[in-house]
Length: 280
Image: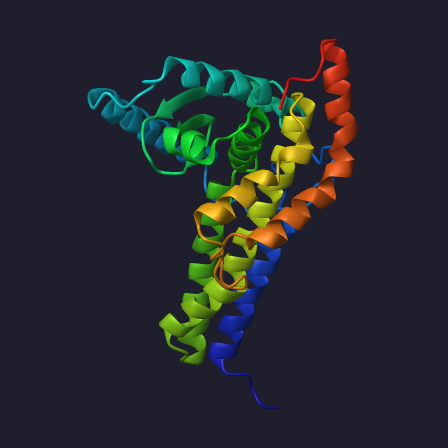
């Protein structure tokens, strides 16, 4: 009987480890009305990620404060925080423990069209996002809900875990097979990281959609933010296959497809407030 080469055994062992780890995956969130179900690979400690995020947010805030770029528009800051707190009040649907996070919300004066929610609930909104896109409350809720969803799903931690595992596996296989490590890394990026990034973006879109609906913001207006993004970018979305974000038309269609699932939640939220829906 011909004996299998040692390199093959090493490759098989690496794959076996991968399968074993993947079988132990779990989801960081509950499914919600949108029915989200996807297991996640988590090898990195959430405590370390959250600590790094808190430190980075503190540094960013201090830097903005020193440059007089922090919360300079009182009305905008109040508006952003109002919407943010409305959304945060709903996070327990997906993660009961997130109610107890040390949430912070700040507005940074910058022409950049950007917003984020760092791990652990550190939210930043740039004035350029609100002013240049002339966002309605619904649209701002959609953006902030999307960013909050990234934190709830711990996508940063998941991405770091995926890179840790894929780095281990690709280096092992490269040694076993003689395939250059650079080629293995490129294949991993194309076959694993980019598709997962797109999946994470869609997850954040639809979780954000449910958060805004439960908070009383009309989910039918969520996709309009991406139409505005298309206009600002001149409609140049890049190749959908290589983009870490879905192309504009694709993203709009996917968001709109989930609206019927969460629209009753919005209607119930408005009815519960016993006041007319806010003007749009």
